[in-house]
Image: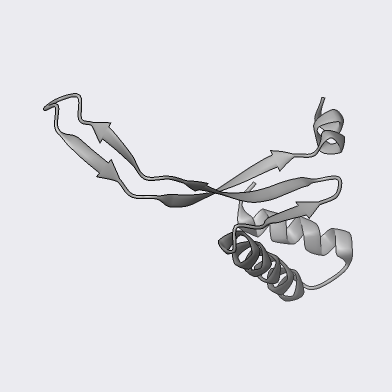
Length: 90
């Protein structure tokens, strides 16, 4: 399912226009981005949790030439499915 299909399904279920649903989804994405950018988590009951994790810098070795490189630190976004949704999918 792509973004267009998702917008159509959600707008049908809510009885709202696609423009309203697009604004809602954009606002949700902005909230997740802001909270996870602050290394906080966003939990949606019955769906799951978005959580930002900070990965420290590390040294890696290129296997082809043996050179050591420093990988800079970065923040990654993870998603953990709730048990309710996991059980519904089974």
